[in-house]
Amino acid sequence: MKRYLTLALVILAVLLPACANFGSSAEAGKRSEAARQEAIRQEEVRKQEEVRKQEEVRKQEEVRKQEQVRKQEEVRKQEARKQEEARKQEEARKQEEVRKKEETRKQEEARTQEAVRKREEARKQDVLAQIETLRRQRLEDHDDPSLVGMVTEEELKKADKNTDIIIDECRKFPAFGRATSLRAAVAAFVHFIERPAHQPAEIEDRLAKAESISA
Image 1 (tube, rainbow, N blue to C red):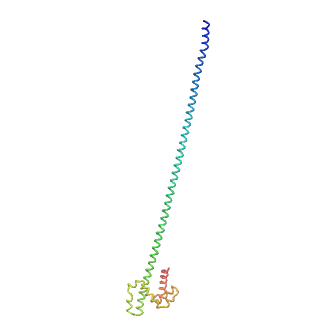
Image 2 (cartoon, rainbow, N blue to C red; image 1 turned 60 degrees about the vertical axis):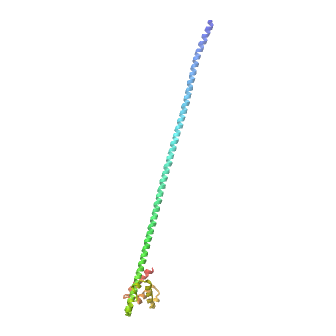
Image 3 (cartoon, rainbow, N blue to C red; image 1 turned 90 degrees about the vertical axis):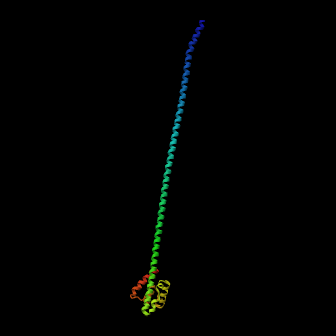
């Protein structure tokens, strides 16, 4: 019996340290696994943080590019507005230039028409003066009182009547019909029809007026 008890004690003495070591090994294994899992978790957290930072950088870069594009578009629009304003100013300048040219042309045309009107008026007045001189000359040459009323004042203002009277007088003098130049015709008219006191000066004056009218 003692022998069995002794054997049991020996076995117990041998097994107790082994059981203790087994428990310690299991605990160490659990701690190691926990540490490994923690390392895996931290690595996952690190990767997620890295991904988050990369996404944030990407978004910031995208925002920067969009802002750059917006500024470039704004600059383009400003340039387009400047070009449009410059085009409108150039168009307004050309229109103003055209308007001034047209105004100058109209003024020049009005001046020309006024000059023509004045020359025509002067010519008519000259013709009337010539007819009146002719009427008085006839009265002086023929001493015929009936000639005083041969042409009324109203008739003297009619161009057709004036022209007829002058043509009739010119036909009486062959020198006028044979004239081959304006000077010769004017000289014959002054010498034979008007017969003023200072004929050379009158010829030059009449010639200048005739040339201005025919110019």
